[in-house]
Image 1 (spheres, one colour):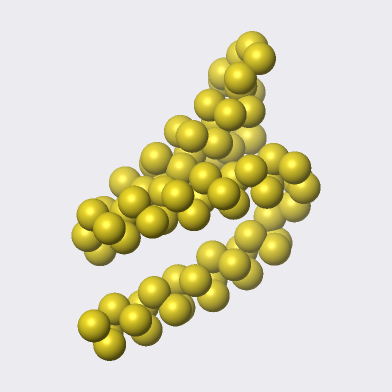
Image 2 (tube, one colour):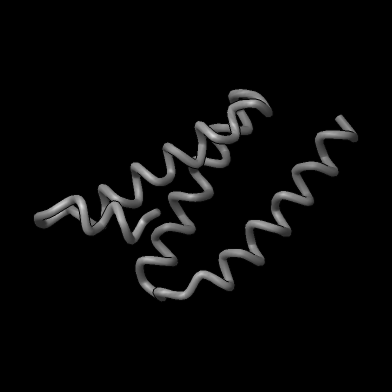
Length: 79
């Protein structure tokens, strides 16, 4: 999604806009878990979007997403 948004946006801030919009969409997809979870997911993807923008490789981010998703799910059942 970030790459496609980067193609849509033009200009000096195309990379930053693609990261922000994709992070917001990712957060909205996680709203079913509650507002704090949605905000945390948006923030996490913003950071991961910067990493992807620098590296161009998604596999490390997939592992981070999986591990943090499992931890969040586990903590949700504890609380």
